[in-house]
Length: 499
Ligand SMILES: Nc1ncnc2c1ncn2[C@@H]1O[C@H](COP(=O)(O)OP(=O)(O)O)[C@@H](O)[C@H]1O
Ligand SMILES: O=P(O)(O)OC[C@H]1O[C@](O)(COP(=O)(O)O)[C@@H](O)[C@@H]1O
Ligand SMILES: [Mg+2]
Image 1 (cartoon, rainbow, N blue to C red):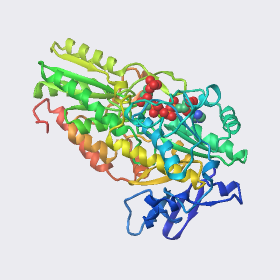
Image 2 (cartoon, rainbow, N blue to C red):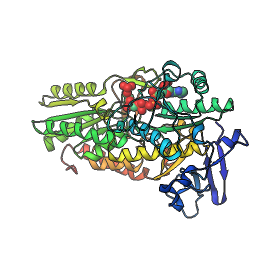
Image 3 (cartoon, rainbow, N blue to C red):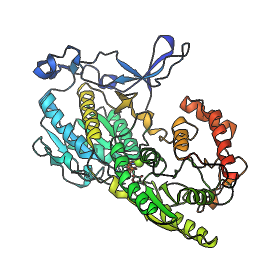
Image 4 (cartoon, rainbow, N blue to C red):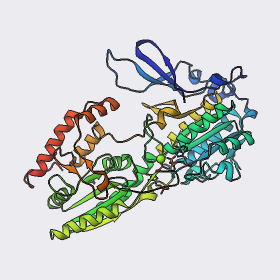
């Protein structure tokens, strides 16, 4: 996908999204029907100015370039579809996520109530449903109360992506608006569907709505369902804490989702304050020796009598196999860590009681909470406004709190990960006061990663790279934090921990 870059004064760059007019000149346009809708026409500012854009980086310097911007979402004065011309379809792909049904509901209701489009199809069972299943009609009545249920009424799947068959099905069914709800894998597929649609010269808008509890979609502030998942994870952490504090030397261990990105574990830890140690894929850890996990567990048990550990599923694990979409599939890291901790303390003859809680699917199978429901509504309406206005080849999502249209190529490039040299991870370390495992003199050895020894030492070049990619300059303060951590852990219990 060729980037569509528009440059302006002072280093202004608009990373624009594709539009029908890029490859289909002279299409007819129509006045936006919202102009006659009493709910909107009284709001003079309702239509978005063509030039409205949103800056990617909120923090700016006096003499710095204005930087990258994205096109602001919202209804335009002109639309590229007459209401009865629209044949829309909705598909949900990948793992479940709180809010999927809300997005489906709001797409159906928004298309009907705002633009008078009544021809809407549900594709069942993810991408393969385009060519292997029948569609179902969707109306506001059918979707009226689905937001109260978890999951997706359309069903979902991994794998089964065949571009030509999907686009053939779009053409055969006369579909001209495709709403694709899914995570990073899904949006990669959506991007290829857009390319094929464009190659065939079709007037079909392809718009993605990013979904994933992992929060691994870059550029956007966060993905829908993430908040709900973090909230639901609190119940597991509370249970682990209650169990741990009720016995002598109690250890509660909670495993949360997060294949490559530890956002759920990090935010659930920050929200809870009962967690003593959070382990995520981005931050290698080691068990033995000074600054290692065993030492820290021993210390917390001595000081507090109990402790809680949260571990993300992808933390320090060896990839066992791949799922149908090609994603990493792991052995249970929680079981492995439970076993290792129990064995270690048995060996040093300290009686501990460890309770392992795995709420994996519980945190994503629930309906969306209030804030995610609002977020899903905004995303669905933004997607509709964009497709009606002729935008395509993009996702919708918030950047610095403002909804934008972001070209596919921007988000399929590189997954969003916790940057351990960034302030948020530093906040977590200050909140739990756990070791950073950044001992510059030690290799972080992770059981199961023998083939892929992970070095905990972060090199100067890596820090500089991180600064470049995040625009932060926390590295030196973090190295200081790390220094303090190591001091705390090598004083053999004599230095009081902050907690
Ligand atoms: N690189 C890719 N190109 C095309 N389709 C893909 C790609 N990666 C994943 N998909 C398809 O997208 C769908 C969902 O992907 P998956 O990774 O399982 O979930 P998610 O979208 O939530 O990350 C699957 O049907 C999968 O086959
Ligand atoms: O067992 P499943 O359905 O493959 O789901 C497990 C995966 O789902 C996730 O929560 C989210 O995955 P996607 O967003 O890629 O669908 C991962 O963290 C986890 O590894
Ligand atoms: Mg994914």
